[in-house]
Length: 477
Image 1 (cartoon, rainbow, N blue to C red):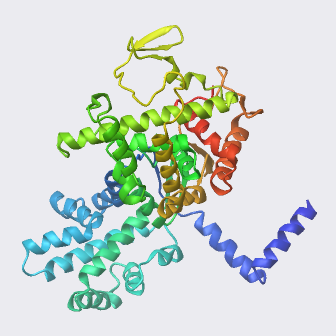
Image 2 (cartoon, rainbow, N blue to C red):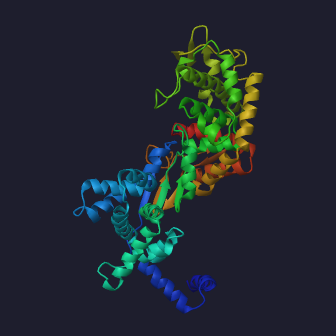
Image 3 (cartoon, helix red, strand yellow):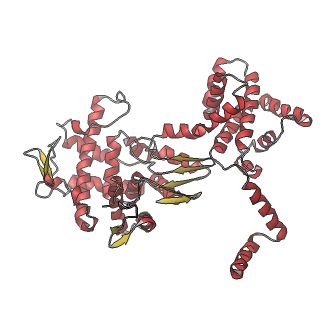
C-alpha cells in the first residue's frame, strides 16, 4: 500500500510544484463534484439525415426550450417564447426575417439581448466559470463573461450593464453578438455528445453530419454496421465499395459519393445505360422521400445504376466468400442458385420467384466472374474510394473518436447488440480460428478494423465484409 501511495505522490509531483497547488486542485475538484452534472445527449442511427441531426443539436434536444419556459413562462407570451427559441436555434435566418418586419430594430435588439443574457446565465450556471470562459466565442469573450457574472439587483453595476448593451447596439454589433451568444447557449446546452452508431447510408447528408461532429467540443462515437461498411470501403474492400454504391443509388444519395467525396460514378452510369438500354429496371427504382424531385427518366437512370452495381456486388462478394470458407457465409451465394429460364432462385429446399430475370452480364457457367467492363469499373471505384481525400479524412475521424464500445459514466455504450446465448451469457464466436466473446470479441473487431484502414493488411481488409454482413443481420453465426 505504501509503495502504491509513493507512486501516486511521485506522479503528482510532476504536475504540481508544492502542497499549495495540490490543495487548490483538491478544493477545486471537490467543489466541481457538487455541481449539477453536465447534460449528455445520445443519438443513434443518423443515417445521413443531416437536417434532423442539425436541428436536434440546435435545440439541445429540447433543453433550450425547457429553460426558456422556466425563465419566461409567466412573463412573456407563448408566441414570444417560441420566437426566442427559433432565434437561438437559427439566429442569422431569424434576424433576417425580423428585419423585414421592423423598420427600427433598436428596441428589438435591446429586449432580445437582455433575454438572451438571462438564458445564457441559466444554462451555463451548472458549469465552472473556467469551463464557461473556455467556451466563450472569440471577439465577445470578455463582454459575455462580464454580462454572465453581473448579479441581478447589483445597483453598483446596473449602469455598467446597461451601457454594455447600448454600446453593442450603437456600434452595429448587435447581429454578431446575438449570433455569438446564441451559439454559446447551444454549446452549453449539451456538455457531451454520444453518437451510438450509423452515421452513414440512406440519407444524403452523412458528410455534412461528420463535418459538424468534427467541430463539436466533446463527443464519442460507437461504430454501427453502416459505419463499418464505409470504413471497409475506404480501406479498399471491393465488396464494401459495391455495397456503398448500391445503397447510395437505392436511396437516391449518389450526390454523397459524387459531390461530397469526388467518387467518379460516370463509368458505372455509362455501363449501366448501355447494358440495360432496353430495360427500365423497375425492380430497382430508387427510394426517394421526394417523389417529385426527379423526372421519370432520371429515376430510370438511377435504377439502371443500382441494378448494375447490385450484380457487381453479388459477384465480388461471391469471390470473397469462396476465398474464405471460414466465414461460413455460403448462404450469400445466390447467383449460382438462379434458374433464369424458370425465373426462380433456389435457396435451400425452397424455390422463390425472381422479380427480374434480365441479367446479361451473369454467365451461368461462371456466375461470379466479372466481365472486363465490370472489372474496370471496380478498379476505378476502388481507386476513387482509396484516394478520396475528404472520405479518408472523415473515416480517419471515425477511427480517432470511435470504438466498438465505450464505457462512460459507468455505462456501456454499443450499437445494436452483442452475441448472447439463451442463458444470458456472452456467446463464443470463432473468427479466423480465434474463439472470442464479449469484450474480447469487440476488441478484436476493433483491432482488425484499425489494421484494415491504417496498414491495408489484406486479411483485415477482407474481414470488413464479414463484419458488415454479420452485424447487418445482428448476429455472428
